[in-house]
Image (cartoon, rainbow, N blue to C red; front, side):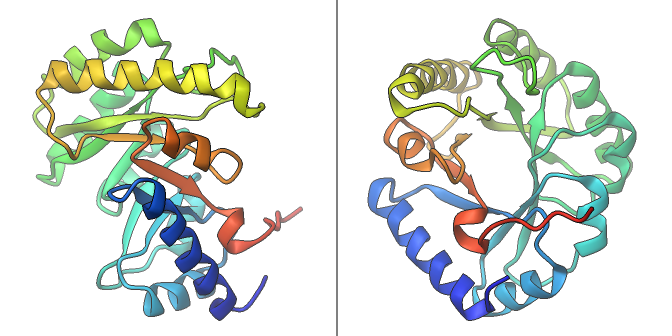
Length: 226
């Protein structure tokens, strides 16, 4: 992996690019497979950075506390692993069922915390991906709004890996759903639409995304252990 100085320069460049398109958008660094040492060094020189982890075990192995740093969970989450992360992350982006929401509610209540969450939407209808079908989003919103230790902060989606022409209609549908949910819950300007990764973050930002999750564009190619 490249030096931290190179990674920090890429981060600065990407953050500037993101804000040139959407000035209020948030950049989450998808830090899967990136070592704790690299993350600690980046957090030290870039206060306010946000790391997003996909796997509970990896999050636990790398977790550290640093002023200005926040962690988010952005991957598929099993109910039996909620207990390990509720005290460590500021936002769980991938809530895709009432059962999962209920477990986050239960575990958050135990530590007297109100957990910020996003509802994951499977806007592309892909069987290989998590997320709630669009038609089931509003009933899940109703259920979550009754849970006192959850704060619904927006929607999240992982869109298909396809070309921009095919993505734009999906993003428009996602943004329309986002506006419907925001209106339903009486949300303010901080309501989040988390969509867009290294391959499609520009399309996402131009079509209403307020948060993007980018990893390899900053950290370089991922290195998976055998």
